[in-house]
Image 1 (cartoon, rainbow, N blue to C red):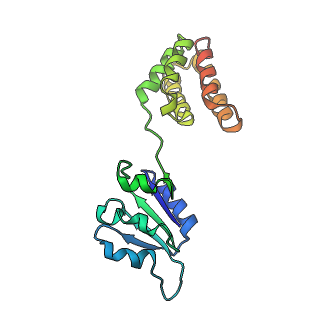
Image 2: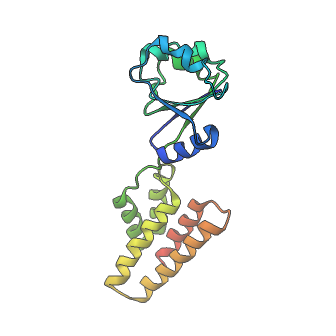
Length: 201
């Protein structure tokens, strides 16, 4: 079994690696490997176990050995290639992509605070426009984090002016936060509903 893991969310990737390889797996840095080393890695056994569990770091970055990978897809061992970057344009990638599992672990995109605050301030005077602004960024944002930013901005507003409207908005956001975590409704629909009612608060 060979799998390729790539992406910048190293914590999730490491957790998955431990589930598959266990705790006592071998780790090999591939920077200085040559093609002559590959038979020992992919086909060799140890005195203790005929089925090895191996993590290969940055295997695909070493083009001299990467091009030989298709020759070892029938390895009897459990092997994961853990790649910082994976170039999908190479001939080797195109040859193996349908033959082994390739999994990407990516961190959620960083939220643009200014955009969030602009949407929030717009919602207080024009809910429909705020929803239009939100729909442009929904695919790139996480709704739970977005709601957290709305709450932080509402708390700042409340600290400046502890009026009825500020209290109502905080209550509505508390309900939004609870609904996002406890219902199966699309969280973006819940956020949109909040934005539409904010101007009337």
